[in-house]
Amino acid sequence: MIAEHPSSRSEEEVLLAFSVEPTHDRKTLEKYLTDYPEHGQALITCSIELMVDATRNVEIVATSEKAVDRAWQRFQSAVGQPEEASVINPFATLNPTAFKSLAKKLNINNLLLIRLRDRAIDAATIPRRFVQRLSTELGATTDAVMDYLRNPPAMVSGHSFRSAVKPAVTEQISFEKAVETSQLTHDQQEALKALKD
Amino acid sequence: MPEPLKRKRKDGVLYERPPEIEDWLRRLETVDVAERLRQFTLLSRKSPGYVPSEALVYYLRRAWTEGMQGDFEKIFRVLMKRIEQSLCSAISDSRMAGARGIREEIMDRFAERIAKDCGGRIGLLDFYEIRFDKAFVAFRTSALRQIGPSVVDMVPLGADRDDGLEISAEVEAAAAGFLGGDPEKLDDPAFRLELTAAIGRLPDDQKQVIGLLLQGFQIDSKDKAVMTIARILQCDERTVRNRRDRACKTLRVILQEENAQ
Image 1 (spheres, each protein chain N blue to C red):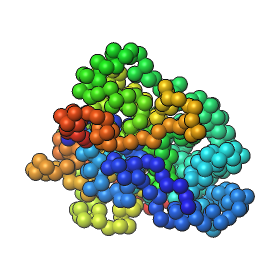
Image 2 (image 1 turned 30 degrees about the vertical axis):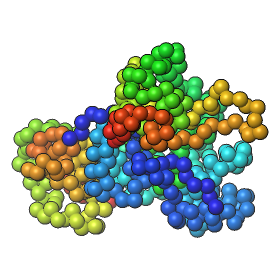
Image 3 (image 1 turned 30 degrees about the horizontal axis):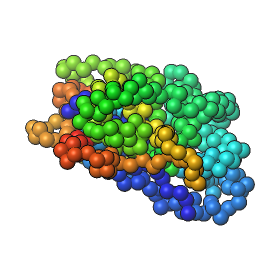
Image 4 (image 1 turned 45 degrees about the horizontal axis):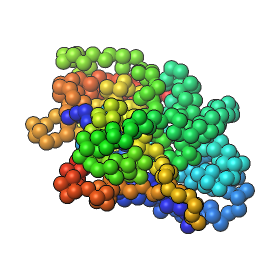
């Protein structure tokens, strides 16, 4: 029953979403197992840990500051590094011709592909089958592409900054909205909507 | 008015903090900063004025956004101290080999998540402003799947991991005795509580079966549309029954030991 279908959400994200559900009964677990079969084992473990954890009494134990100091140091070294450094841009190696060719292979237009590249689309709303196809065409793993897409939107380059308004990153839109507003043909829009999870 | 969360559900609707957390945030807004920070340092949930961790996450993020580095570090340290306490209970030295190292690694990983959130990763910490304890169970579960030991220390009886389809009469009898031949015993809240606390000490395969039983899943069904334990775990229903019976035998020993203490 737990088949392999890579989703666009990481295990951690799926477990976090599950954990904040108002109830953790059979129905909730069934829904998540159906929606995220690839994280089935993790969801089962998490559902049991949530049950067991509710019975634990956290008693205050004496601890030194060592572990907290260590975590603070880890924070300081991690916050100094822009996240971009650890995430590879899978679009970086594409020249304009390859970029157009990729859009064609995905049966989308350049505008939608630019929005994807610039992370103007909320990653959680991108259908997993689309991410799979994009990853295959980019020659990257689904995880690597998702890691890239989950980052904050890029500052749009090429615009004039001689403006009274401070340049800022645009707010992300949903995949559905992007499909509707990217000047795609009716058939292209329908094909993309059919990929919805 | 606290700033709304940014994270969206799968259906595109924004997540919201529970009303009691919003109430806490509104109340804390009326307190001056120094007093607020003092309240944050209360570690015991039983202390009057204990501030829920969801609110700590909110003020941690706000301190970062407003460039209040001193406040940020103070809240960071309090939050980490709470996390350490929770980890000491969930991953105790007596239950897992290398527990201390694992606890430290989980804390480090959480510190990295905070750093990512500070770096602009959208809504990464939002879940922790909704139900901190539960979200942290999820985070811990995911981290343990990557870095934890494959087998948690358990009582000796649990060492029997044979999934063979034959099961000894002794184990079968122990299992029958455990539930007293009464499957409805699982509906008794007091028994469920005692049992739930004990299943944390079972080997993973047995824990899964008992955990799913407690959540109301049935072992098997002729109806293909029903999500059963056998289908979820992708194994034969007899294997599921064997794991259940072994788990019952183990649980009987655990509960007897605990009741004797």
